[in-house]
Amino acid sequence: MIKLAVIVLISLLLIIFLKDVKREFALILTIACAIILFIYVAEDFFYVFEKIYSLSSGIGNVNSYVSLMMKILGISLISQFVVDLCRDAGENALASQTEIASKVIILIMTLPLFESVINIIIGLLK
Image 1 (tube, one colour):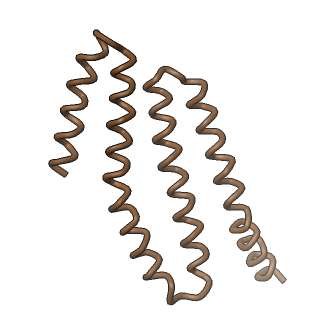
Image 2 (spheres, rainbow, N blue to C red):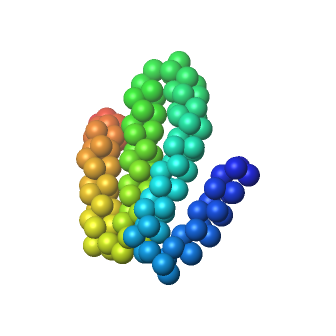
């Protein structure tokens, strides 16, 4: 965590300095720092995915639901990353469209889950 904090603080100082001199370089540095942080955290994130999959693999149908949850979590994190980069670049319209697109994708992915829940409720009511 200390290494991560040092990278962010150094990048932040450079970005603040570059915003006054060359705004384009500040944006490039922001994107580069964000990608480095994402890659650094991604390794730990995949470890968590593997652990959750191994814990759920012994339980029948739960594995497909865990897989769906992990995919949705991944989409959420990646879309938030892209939205933040768009907002940092001053592209608020593109950021909003990215948020809407990710929500629609997540909704489409969860439709089978909603269908299963509705079928269970209908089965209980009969």
